[in-house]
Length: 398
Image (cartoon, rainbow, N blue to C red; front, side, top):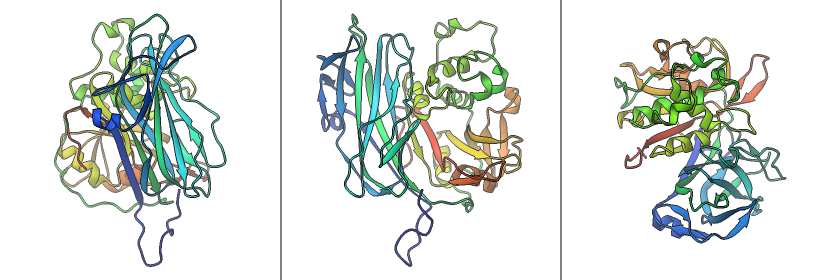
C-alpha cells in the first residue's frame, strides 16, 4: 500500500486508484496468443496443445495490459463452465516499475465438481518482486506494478471430449492509500431503494459439513454469493441438491460452500472462486474495488446488489456485535437518509439477516486499508473489495 503522502507536491492523491480490465468476446480473445484453443464467444479446447498428468490441455495468454498508475496488487477473476472431467488454471505475470517481469504465478486451479482435480489456490509463491496471498498478486515492499497479463490453461481428463469454456477473464489492479479513517461520501442515487434479495443466515449451518471450511461459521462468502445468484433467478436445481439431506435448511448455501471451497486456503472465502461459482449458472461476475458508497449506490440504482468485504472489531459498526478479520455481506439498498441496508449472513436466522448500518461507520470498515485489531496492532484490510454479479447482458455502471 502506498503512503497517503505519495505524489507530486501540491496535488491531492486519491484514496484509491482502480483499473479493472476484462477480456471477453471473440475479438478480445483473438488479441491473445493461444495453442490448442478454439476461439469463439468463449475459449474452448480445440485440438489439444499437449498432454499433462494423463489429460489434455490448451492455453491462452492475454496481451500485456498497461496500467495508468503504479499498482500495489492485482486480483484476477474469471467466468467459466466446467463439466465433469474438466478444469482450468489461471496465472498472472506483472511488470514492475523497474521493467522486471515477475514469474508466472498461479492464482488458482478451478473446477466445479472436483471429479478429477481439487479446487485450490497455491501457497508459497514469491520472489523479490511479488508474492501470492491466496487470490491476490501483491507487490513486494518498495515495488510497484505497471502492467500485467493473464494466462488460462484449459484441461480435461483422459478419455473425455468435454471441455471447459471460459467466457471472461478480468483483472483489477489497485493502489490504495495507507489510511485508517475514511471520509463519509454524501448520499446519492441509491437513496430510498431496497432490492428484493433473498436472505440466508450462515449460522443455521454451524457445525454442518465441516469438511468445507469448518461449517457455517465460515460461510459468509458463499451465503452472500448464493443470495445474489438467486436474486437473479439462477442457482442449483433440485437434482443438483440431491446430495444434501432434504430436511437440511437452505441447501443451496451448502451447495455453494462445497463448490467454492479452496483446499489450500481451507475455507470458502476465495474471492475468484465465488464469482466463478456464479458463472456456472449463467451469470457474469467479477472481483473488483469500488471507491466509495456513492459507487455502490449507482449499482443499486441499476438493480445490482453489491457483495462487499468488511473488517472491524466489535463496536466499530453499530448493529454488528462481532469482530471479523474479513467478512462478506450483501449491500441491498439505502435508507432515505443514506444509511446502508445490508443482508448480513452473520445471523442465526433469515429474519435477522437484514440490517441497517450507519453510512459513515460502514464506509470506514469497508474502505479503509488498515485497522487496529483486538491486540492494538495495525493490520491490513481489503479496502473496497466487492463482487459484482449480474446476468451476462446486464450493463454495469462505469
